[in-house]
Length: 401
Image (tube, rainbow, N blue to C red; front, top):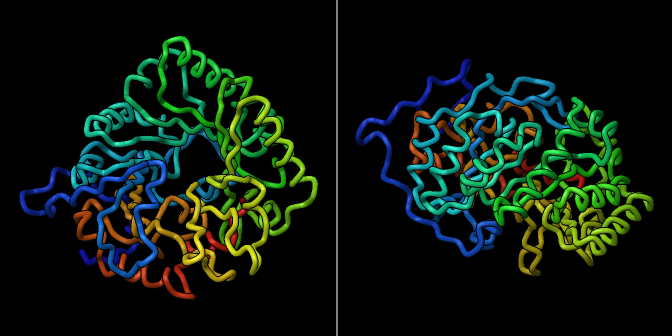
């Protein structure tokens, strides 16, 4: 199959162990100092070819979900046929990068629906990989607390998106708010009782006009639950928009005084209660809402997958090219539950039609072959130009936070 792969009519057959010689030798090790800041491994000088292997994998262990979030494209259309990533495909991918530093086990779906998830985490932790995933928290049960801790998971990110039941129902589509607050709080208390230091638990809220005023209450709720870390997550949407993921809900470039006041009040609450508030990586949450100016071209801007852009003077992009500092096509690989290689985790939210930006197929190609394929090189070349690929253009210009 050629490097440029069109969208399959149906899901690929489950991957079987590759015959001898069909998968290239494992990609070389890519050690990094801090897995939480993996993007810093890529320098300013970039080209169509990635000289180093990826340091991070995003594996969509499932595209199934038990919620109907108004900010998620899967609520409104089928992106791929429903599936979990099977064990054979999972190992086929990760065994080609045995020294991978960081693996994120989520995509468009709820990871805790996957029966093999604990096994996947342990498989990665046995080789020293930093492992995390985002969850909606609906399936976190006291009976499974110790088992989750025993996997060695490094981070557990809980997407809550509201500070009260009614707002949660509006954004997330189903009435699980009280259960999540109760069980996440119980999990943190269980960690404290048993002396477990991992996984590191954080709460996430998508920044929208509909919920930003709840930030101070969200901080107080986190403190009551025992969670000490909060992240404001970017709202990203495509040209047409869907549900609440539309320009009308976006905060970027149109933040009102009341919204700025809510952010300032939340930071004060956090300081008093010992809860950190982070705008997807920015030191000052409010900075990521301000329009860049010639005098402050990139202050506070962070990427859509929760990583801050390089803000050094030599690396400041033009004001109309916010995608210019993106490092993801040189630092990570993202695979859907079917093995489709996409540019990053945010692409499904910022552009429609996987066939328009598929970069390879892990069921048919080696990771080495995909990583510097014609498709990947073309994507990188476009990203470095003033006419980036659609997922990058929409991501960079429609950040909400």
